[in-house]
Length: 223
Image (tube, rainbow, N blue to C red; front, side):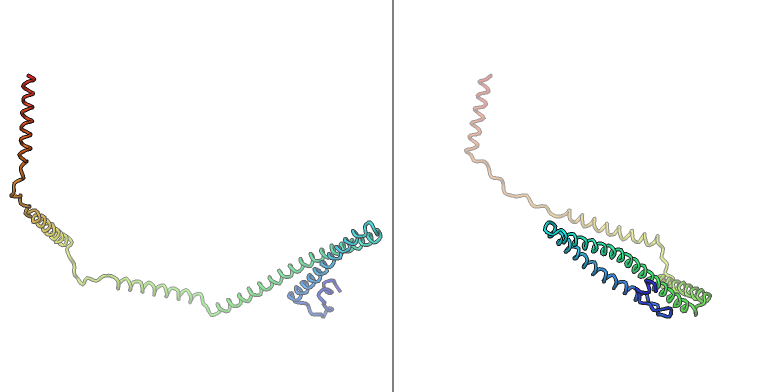
């Protein structure tokens, strides 16, 4: 029996072939078992190293035996590391193959469904149907355009005549504004006060006359 047959527990020639899911699960179980063995060996290596250090000067024979056991454990650990790498690679390849198988199976299922959906379809009938749809859409658009077009019922107006009437209305408005401005200019102004302004005090006038006389006297003397 081959190594894979032993690993997957296959029977003889008439044995049942394991499914990809079963094989993947067994590989994961094997990985878990080897990982636990790794942890166990790492602890043993650490213990043997402590034993060798403890008996290094006191009991060299015990220290040497501890180092030998440590070497054996390290060798087993290295073998397990290699085995785990191989199993991981095999599991990933099997998972990828299983994924591809499922993808192809689903694509084949979809292809069959599409073929069944198209069995009752005739390309000529499809083209004819699309032409009918296009014609109906064009007809509906023409009807919508006709309905939305404004209808005047024969009422046509001369643009020049309308513009002349509009200018007359504007001129009337302008004349009305000018008349309102003219009326505002005729508003009566306030009347001039009838009372006279108060005269300057008499005493102030006499003082001014005396100043003028002094100024004239000074001018005569200067001549």
